[in-house]
Image 1 (tube, rainbow, N blue to C red):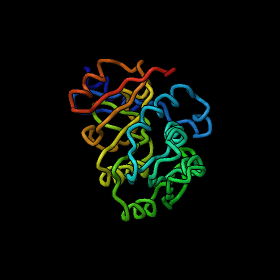
Image 2 (image 1 turned 135 degrees about the horizontal axis):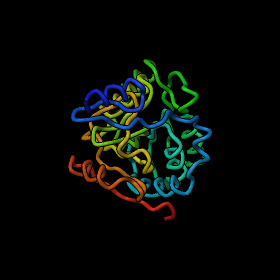
Image 3 (image 1 turned 180 degrees about the vertical axis):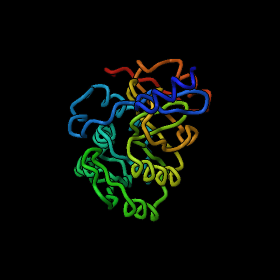
Image 4 (image 1 turned 45 degrees about the horizontal axis):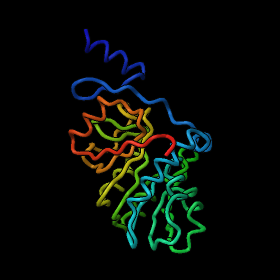
Amino acid sequence: MVRRDLRELAEAGECRRVYGGALRLQPDAAHIHARMGENIALKNALASHTAGLFKARQVAFIDTGSTNIALATSLPRDMPLTVVTSSPAVAVALSDASQIETIMIGGRLDGATGGVIGSVAVQSLQHYRFDLCSLGVWAISAEGPSVWDPEEAAFKREVLSRSETVVVMAEGSKIGSGGRFPVAPLDTVHTLIVSEDAPSDELSRMNASGVSILKVPAHD
């Protein structure tokens, strides 16, 4: 009976079946311009904590997403750093940082997410290895990060394969839910920086997988 219920929910697009149960599907992403105006204080707090993980002379990847745009704004302007990004908005946010060399990945721009995807974008990554990656996700659970677009998932998988350390910033609503397309297992993520309202039961499951978790209040 339970299996039939899960199958019906999955067919209705309300969950994604995983081993041992199902994940609630996170609603489809709003346009990047809309998301940039939402939960600004929280995103700035997440970004401020994440900026402290960056070290001088690293080669880092900053993914697309409104919180990653806030991260680009939060990085110290006097830190010598190379940042590779798939997001034009991230590149613009770093344009006033004279000590940060910013490199844009080429590819097809997805207007909704504000980042480049596709085969050209994946091929562009072949030139890089990253000391640190700030990965943008639409949802994350003990199963791992996920997104809504298969090409975006493929691009992120290639980024992860080239990253020594991976950090994910997430609002509490993204925790314990799933997008339609899994990106990678959770053990590809080293640090999760999350708002303090995230569900504690799911965070416990994620922490048991070896992910370091830092909770951040909305007003830091």
